[in-house]
Image (cartoon, rainbow, N blue to C red; front, side):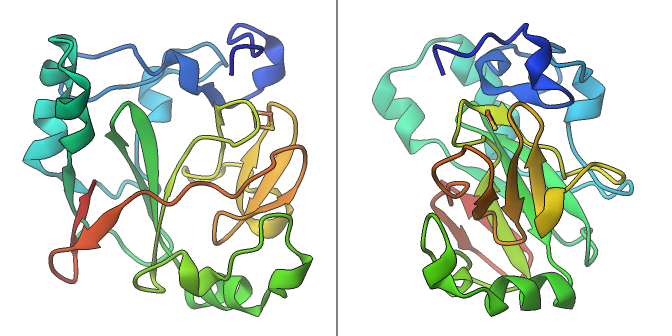
Length: 205
Ligand code: FES
């Protein structure tokens, strides 16, 4: 990450994780516009769906601004109500200073992810090992190359050749399971610790 210049035009339409320390006053952490993305552009929603973000993520920025001890940060969790997210839509929430991509996958996306021959993958992981419920993919939205935030959350975003996310910084493409399929990124998008508290309420962390 240190070798990545967040002001470089290489970022294209992505946003750099290094900018995510910027805090807004509305309870969310958002990256700045280093890569041409406005704060409003970055945050959230495909097709206008809005996930209700639980108290954890609302409280988080204020805790963060107080520079809490590492163990306090390590315990932080975010609860997200996904009941308003429709099939094919995505939401982004901030958790521990990073964007978390939540996609309610279509049958096609689930099938595409499941059909991949794992032995052909750079970072060999079966889709079934990356999800708790096939319909919901939850990954940290930080490219594993140099830390840009890939495109693919918003309607009209480039998703790359594999129906997932595309990082324009250097051309990494991720599939509908968040696995690296093309470009320089060495690893799949990371799956955070999470658990479903109900069918549509998820706790991240
Ligand atoms: S940061 Fe280089 S491809 Fe994503």
